[in-house]
Length: 415
Ligand SMILES: *Cc1c(COP(=O)(O)O)cnc(C)c1O
Image (tube, rainbow, N blue to C red):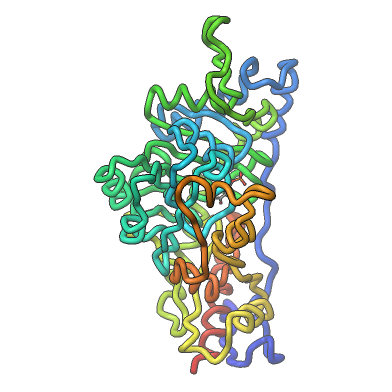
């Protein structure tokens, strides 16, 4: 007979039995295929993307897997977004609409272009941009909308694209957390004008660091390729190679390309497992009183870089810290997902984007402030959301016990 999942009422934090009975499943992220391609990369006698074959194979393979026309490899997800912004001509005096709950990498490129991020509020349970808030944030200075598919859950892309079309503003997809995610059956990254991916070590696939910029547009595809490499036009005649505007060096090396090529061969499997795990958790905790499960926008398939539920403080006798401590005691390594909305980071709050200068938050004819209360939904999410662990290596037992721990803790603390 199978041992039943522990249903004991007494919480582990109060000396009761732990819900989790075995360590979470683990596995090897990098192995034979990565090593083979790395050896091949080294044997080329060059690690420069333009001469070698690995970055080319990595980008071509990813583009072909998804039906993307152009794919440029860069050094990070931050670099991918910055490259897209440069290609779209984002510059001084422009605004880019973005979500307040995201990685700093969503905002960095905007500021490096001396443009200004305008934060629009989010949906309370799927954590992506609220279309009505985006619409309200549009001004004559808006040059782009950065639709962040947070956790791997796609934004309401029909609404984002409709707003973009109505105001003639391009939509860039921040897919850094959204490897393998789809919206209404189509891969994310190919819905907006640009899709930007990250291969930092915390994403579904890793090259240590790295990123990809994809587009279907011929001239933007060529522009992104050049911008990522100092705006050199390496394919042009000698006289035409020199850069005509400023761009950074965001090149990916052949070593990253080799690992990336191996990693995306695992992508479908990794993403299918993470999708099953996250949706499986939701299935098991969505009716638990006192909490909200992680929602996904209609038509979206989420690949869960992480899982974020929320407590309903009015229905519980404890605060978020105690709720998380109780989950930890049950053997679930939950943690507080966000420390703050991005706009409350020091550089915005204290207006110190560039040391000793308030530019571009001042000085372009418009004054920008990022006070508390700017995006109330995002602020409430910061105060009430808890993460549950996600990995492609977790087992069925891990799933049942994780869900059981959440049920047990929520029930014990119900008012
Ligand atoms: C990770 C991440 C980035 C930045 O990617 P890096 O490779 O770390 O530069 C940007 N946006 C989001 C939503 C991310 O999660």
